[in-house]
Length: 384
Image (cartoon, rainbow, N blue to C red; front, side, top):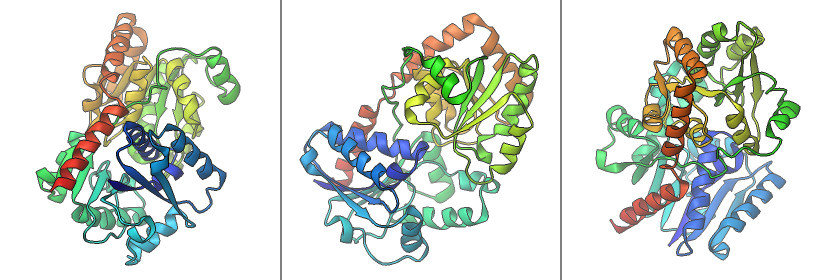
């Protein structure tokens, strides 16, 4: 079959959705040579970065001769304006050619010809649960474009059962139209410590001289970082502990960054290269993941795979990922967070148990398994 993917998020975004799309598509390309893949990208301004990504994909594809690229000389913002806001009636097949299915891994679909089956991933419905954590323009865009794309999709993939149930309850999606497809974890996330990695973190990021709690995720209100800072304050009072937050500042980040600036034990590293993340996890005392709402929670899985103890939110999808391998805490209970963090830092037996449980749990999630399940969904969709 000839299949098209909107690869824009993978090419342009360094965070969670971009990584999801890169890892899933990479696993699909490596899965076998029976399909022809066309990746469509709003590549305006990417330059060498996009050329390097094309070379990487060609190198991992089982049949590189069956992989092609369609680059639009537009930014992702311009493509969204034309297709989502102005609703330009130019079907994506004008760019990709005829395909057996079009897949979008990032919430919205472009215009498609009526005969083309459409597969869509919806990662979460946080904009419906926590609208006050979005800027008004972004909220209007999501409230309009995501439900419209959901209605047009022939089938929907949800990162978790929690998101699947949200789609059914909040947007009246028929249960048979949505499938839970869990994320995987890259084999780069391993407990094996690399030579000199702690010195590398000290030199590059100025961390690691003292023990640190790690938090990973875009800096925006839903991630609940201010409450985490407050929960860490009693633990850091002696000066022997730091809180390191890895994530690009996004919408409504200013109050979070201001709160961090007031606390000398907090370090905002901003966006870091994917290659540094395993070391950041391994050298951390634990991962704190206090999010108010998540569609999956990929940093939790990555930390578990690195053997790092996890203290995480008990909200939405996160317990599905953690299972019995971490401590779960209400995201709104600051005192409970302080107590759980202290326990995970000081209880040696608990730390060892969480490490072993985490490695076992993480082994259940692989991108190869995710890709195989994706292909099963595709076969069912095409056979209708």
